[in-house]
Structure formats: C-alpha cells, structure tokens
Image (tube, rainbow over all chains, first blue to last red; front, side, top):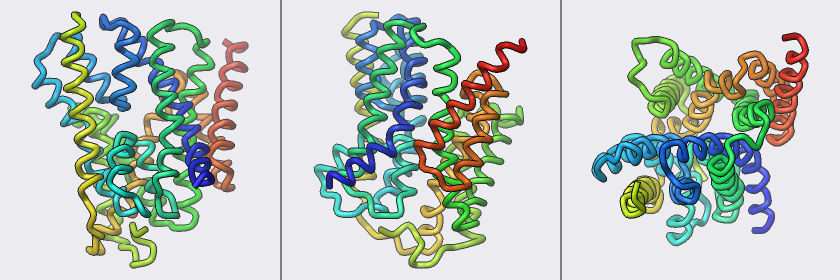
Length: 235
Length: 106
C-alpha cells in the first residue's frame, strides 16, 4: 500500500510541477480580476481545474448570475464525467467512500496517467498521484496571487514544459509496444492542431478541442483496430 | 466584489464541478462488455494525452524554439523508455538551456 502511494507520488511529480506553473498564471489573473489572494487560493483548493476556473473567474468578475456559473462549469467540465466512467474500468478494489474522495482528483492529466497504468488502480495509488498536483495547484495559485514576479520568466517558462514532456514519456513507450496506441495519439494530435489552426473551428474552446479530438481518434482506432479481451480497458 | 457574492459563486462553482466528477465515477459499476466500447476506452487516455500535448506544448515556454528543443529531447528520451521524471526534467533543462544560450545571440 505504501509502495503504491509512493509510486503514485512519483508519477504525480511532473504533473505537480506543471500545475505549479499553470496555476501561477491563474493566481495572477485572479488578483487582477478583483479577488483577494486568499479567495484565489480557495478557488484552486476546491475546484482543481484550469479551464473551469478561468471561466469561473470571468463570471465572478462580471458579477454574473449563479445559473451562468453552473452552466459554464457544466459545459466546460463535462469531459470529467466521460473520464470518470473510463476510469471505473481500470479500478482495483475501490469502495464507495474512496470513490467519493478520489473523484475530486479527476483532472485531464491525473486521469490520463491513471488510465494508462498497466496495473489495476487502487485508492493508495490514486491518492499518491493526486497529492503533488493538488499541492502544486494550490501553491502556484497562492504564489501567483501574492507576487506575480517571484520566478524569472525563463524558469517559469521552462517549468511549463514539464507536464507536456511527461505526456510524451507516457505515450511513446506505450506506442512502441502497441502501434495502435501511437496511431490513436497521432490522430488526436493532428485533429487538435486542425482545430487550433483552422479558422473554421475557432468557436471550439481548447477544452472542447481536446475532448472532440480524443473521442474521434479513440473511436476511429476502436473501429479500425479493436483490442482483444486481454488488452482491453479491463482491470 | 463582496465576500458574500464571492462565497455563493465559489460554492456553485465547486459543487457543480465536484458532482460532474463524482456521480459517474461513484455510481458506474458495470464491467463494459462491448468490444467497441472496451477498445474505445483502451485508446482514450493516449488520445487525450496526444490532443493535450500538440499543439499546446509549442506554446508552453513562451518561445517556440525552446519548446521545440524540449519536445525533441522528450521524444528521444522517451523512445529509449526513460522514466517520466527523467524525461520531464531533461526536457525542462534543455528548454531552459536553449533559452539561456540564445539570450546571448539576440
């Protein structure tokens, strides 16, 4: 159990570093939007989501009605529902109280790392995986809110790369073992670039673009190369 | 902005986000049998990672050049199956170094 927690911690470190630099930016813009530093920290500690928080901040700053806040969060964060279902197929023994707590940690990055695990996901592993991203997200927000310029730009810029480099390190070795995985990732990359650069698709927010690209790529590969009983999303 | 307005907004935001995450994760207990859905879920995490990485990685450092160098280093090291941490640290170091070196040329 301790080993599973430590394994999770290790895999969460690059995510934590990435979150630290991303949430730093959120902290800066929260204070610019009229929030106290403590409020910005509270948002990060209770939401743990980048796109949703940025959109929520905009609603707060515009003094929007609560229903607008709820609808905004619903649309932007709906992808977590899909991820939650996918994750249930990877779980080892995972009783309800643990599910209630662990659900809080479902983010794009934590989901992707947990779902790409070869072993069944246990509560210990998942909590280990959540720990550093959570701390990084909270700490980065506070630092950004208190002092927008404690890190030299060259350092915070380089740290921003950590999380993406980690994604590469998850996909590439898996793609070497199963070409289908590589194709799924490549198709998704291609689509998300199309959505980013073709003006036709400029109405898609980046959160939507990720989910649409991923769903299409995974569906295409599931049709072209279905996996057997053994490799499938079983635990 | 008043503290009361903020508290209400915060509660609406946090509760909505939590419920979206929690309900499917806590309530869904069936084993999915459909070969298509199983294959779909098998490919999903890698597709999500791919879509999140490109093109976003190119803008993650504030410089296209340092980001591209970092991406190259990450691709090479991960091809040789280095650990997540090694790949992430080396890519950051390479990006920082590239920025530092090019700062002399500008």
